[in-house]
Image 1 (cartoon, rainbow, N blue to C red):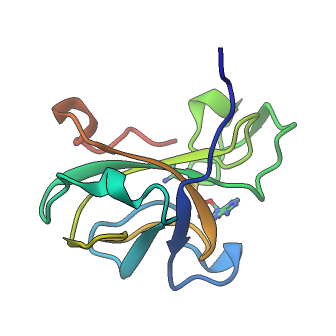
Image 2: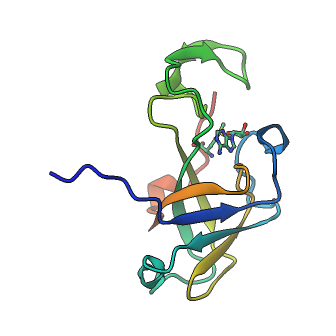
Image 3: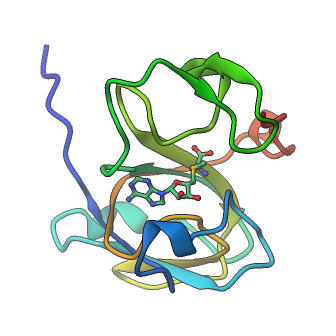
Length: 137
Ligand SMILES: C[S@@+](CC[C@H](N)C(=O)[O-])C[C@H]1O[C@@H](n2cnc3c(N)ncnc32)[C@H](O)[C@@H]1O
């Protein structure tokens, strides 16, 4: 079994500091680019403008030891698996957003919530069940 994780590229957003990021995604937000490293760029074949994609990214500045905390949104004390917090054992961020445009090595979307330079883990076409807004605490 190969359990190695590759970063496939980098996300460019307008946010230089974590505290400048929106609390979560906003499809009406500013343009952001998913820039693929050259060896992974061929994997973009078949993606099209308008298509909804699931984007997975590495929120590396999160605290990986946290298991319970107060929700930033509701204040409720809860386990990290009940929250969208970047503080979790594997700090993976997830977003479903429509593609604005795509070229040979980059995908443009609107409204990501991470600092510029955040590592990109994966892109997948979103399935219908992922397209409705999550019930976020
Ligand atoms: C609540 S998380 C949600 C991430 C993703 N949309 C999700 O739901 O899985 C978004 C927050 O993560 C923080 N953040 C952004 N970039 C980060 C990074 N590279 N490392 C750690 N935290 C980050 C910011 O505080 C931002 O408001």
